[in-house]
Length: 344
Picture (cartoon, helix red, strand yellow):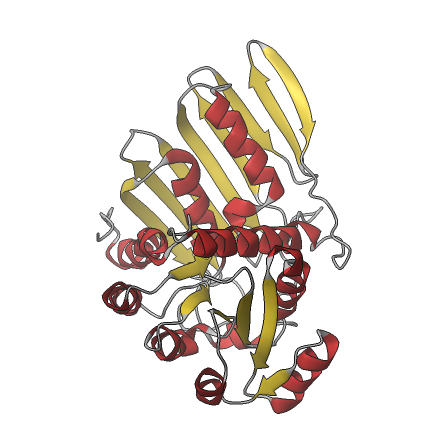
């Protein structure tokens, strides 16, 4: 494999700007953005101009047919993920796809199976576990400061108008569980391990939305730990912690609390220590988005290094399917009123 990799970007919209900035910042590690694509030609052309990309397209097939790409990053709405992944992976091009992975668990399985059949690298851009506060918390747990985690609450609660930048979310039939819920459920897996079963209650609190905008879930992990995972875009509480995730983890020797001001309270050995967990503000980032933006860079960096090393990413398709199975189980649990075991 060459020291330099040609990257193709599919999707140049609202959130894709963070990916474009990140890939540009990875040029010293061998990344070259060779082409960008968007169904809106004006957006594709503008991205090519801003990021000094040699070619732009408004048709993904044309880009894949005409470019010699090592890796494709798909940053589009979920309904387009499966056909685009199949198009790229079918050509043997290593692929990253934005979360949510697919429209259904079966779609995710189909994409994973195709990648395995072709021996092609496939990862999902799940960035919350790469957020700076979560990386610090992971290290604290790994060191054993709180012992074995046995209870947690992970909450993403905001009233921030996310629909202004992503108005299509108002029309999603299945909304918050696969949108922000996929992130916080992944954090539960990341910190406490796999899940045996879960219960869920879903609500639609904003009359403008088609799907659910609030989810409250209780997870029983295979380790015996229990976590409460909740998320909403309909909170009216002030101060609004957006875009921070609030987190508490208790172990048999101590506890961790991540506050909305990005301070970690570590209770260990009978003492309370407060740790600054505010993320670095990258040169292109801005508050309060900087935590998310820095995590996008770290996710791209991790996935790229895994690709270069010829190993699966920590956020591989196989790993992310386990998180997506929790999303599917939440919908079934809410519909049936019963605890549900996630499908394998």
